[in-house]
Image (cartoon, rainbow, N blue to C red; front, side, top):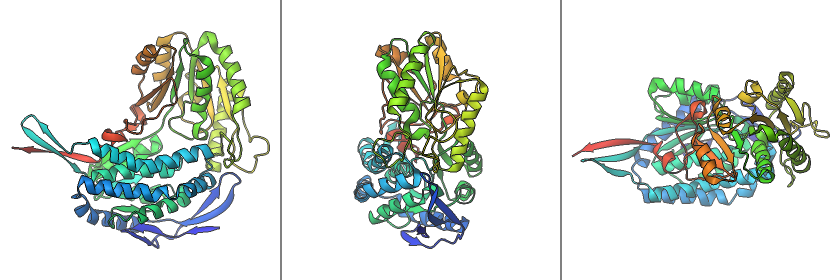
Length: 472
């Protein structure tokens, strides 16, 4: 069993002041694989102080120097990619295919930031004035468990590119993943205090980051409920916030789409990352007159292609939920869907056969879901797909937008111009057209209660900068 008893402050691995221990559980079989000593408020304040001191000089580095630091971070993390994938599968329960992609995203974040710097102008002429974009200060980075190192990498890369220093609070449930990633960041040899990592509880470390006046900005990915708490706490010291929150993403299949391609993609969209992602296409909207066809296609696809199994196996498409708590949450929604009167098309309550030891959930699909049902409105964060029907294009758009969320959406059509027309009317920060697309340099973030601000590329970099006007 592994013991993790170090945090990273001011360029050194130190023993935390905090003493509380947290169990690390393998979700595939619920065995204890390690313990981590959690940081406390004192540790967090020490990390913030180190970052504040480092900001004095790091904020004055040149773009060329920051590119060099980012390249070093890329080189150091690349060396241990396989280790990071292996521990992510074990500690998080993500499938091999997802963990490989997620880890590569974490590594690539540093070179994407370099690409962004190559086209970014920190000084701009506006009318008769000069506007300079300056680093905000110390950034508090708070990340979730469902793609831990990827979130750390993308947020850290933009902070470094901007000239900010950081205090990072990863999920305590991802401590083994964080340990390897932190070792890589240390190897890159950035100035002491630029990167500080304190693993601890949200109500302890996260709260201190939220209220501490020496934190200038918070970049948070997680639930809408926690995001609201952070936003409320941050306002007292006028912190800037970037909040990437929950989602209930619609996937509209228009009547002229190729259903033999669109429906399999819809299943992948719904079950990606075992359903534990804010961007999953958890609401499938199909033409009313083609519901029977869709049901037959989905039953066949789930039966033939969706495999719930050990995440370390190459052909597994859905692994376990991250914890027993998350397993029970998803189970409660499956029961709720049945009680609400939705038609259970695939899956259902309980563990899949032979997987009772872990937090495995059956790949579940509901048909004849009404928009008023809770399974159509609330984020489940598990492999549960709801199929809704629409009578015409206008109703499809109305249903798609009838949600408090607005992070991601999907549209499929045989006519690209029609798909674009529909996409423009959907209230979402991103809309993927005719496929499961990702652009790491295009802005990512949510409308409505899916968040505030944007990440990635030039839009993401600007979130870490403050404009100053020089009147000449």
